[in-house]
Image (cartoon, rainbow, N blue to C red):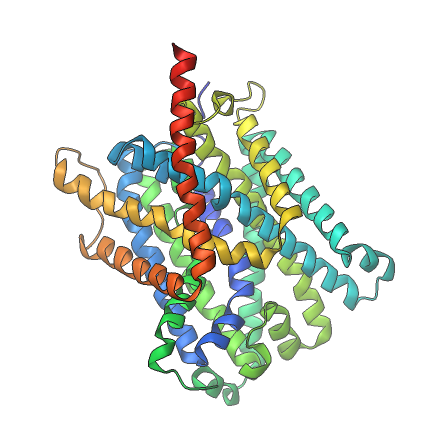
Length: 450
């Protein structure tokens, strides 16, 4: 059985927005302000991040229309560079790219639930949600629940996904509108406030800050993983990529303006729960408590999106015998990649019990940028070497758009190597470990077929 084309333009846009708006926007701004000491630089970094993500999305759109099947980078790298790079991107997706964000979102979700119950003095519930063991249990249960939601049918899963994403957009938009309503002109000065000097030695940290911003923009390529399920891909995929990224970028920039204007920068510097802090400053403790529960709803959408997208990569790998062939099994009853979803469910739960949300975010950043860069470079290579491969969609302002994406991302990665050497080296180590795994798997498959 094959996956069917049954997802339209609206669902595709919702998937990208759901995949992008998650832990990053609610965890990073305070830390970035602490690293740059300048509110205006923070806003500028979020604008640059949106432009970089859009450059990546426009470049990917050409490949997605050329090869409109599930798998994303895995499919494109296999077509352009061969099996080893394709296997490695699938390896990183399995070990880090999708499983870790699911764990991160679910853990942060439980933390916000705990904050909500603490504020309403629900002692019995708080004793459970405040205990780290029970936090992990609840996070694991959330992952398992959404795993089963996406097992029982593509249309059922996407219907729930769309509802959660519409709620997510409504919550973020309401917060922005209400924030601007209560703010007055006296708060504008906070947008260009300085909390320290930005020296030459701080440049690597600015690059690292942009990498953290790009973590929040991760998911701009989400539609490519389900391209084989999008109806009229030649028409819908470029629109999905453009509007998904553009809508998210506008929301991010406006949300950050509200965050930075809400209170003095010293209060939010180096703080993870910046959304709750801003809500408390703008609307008072009761509204802050309400915001904690709405962020939990927002993160539910992120968990759902990741549980939907990741298994499509493992499904594509299994079809090519790059991983256990059972992962290409499509449920006859539900029409979904059953075992691929179960595998991601299991790995995400392992991450929940083995690490914290923050540590996962730190070591994910570097690894998640390697293969998108290689993929966009691949677009430029395939255009030059195989001009006969014509896509009905052409990247605007080519080659400036792909070059802008590649150069900016490489700069961020160099900054990460300078500032987060150990965690970046760990990410590289995870990647390199995939090489012997690939050859062992190839040997196993060769022996099995003979």
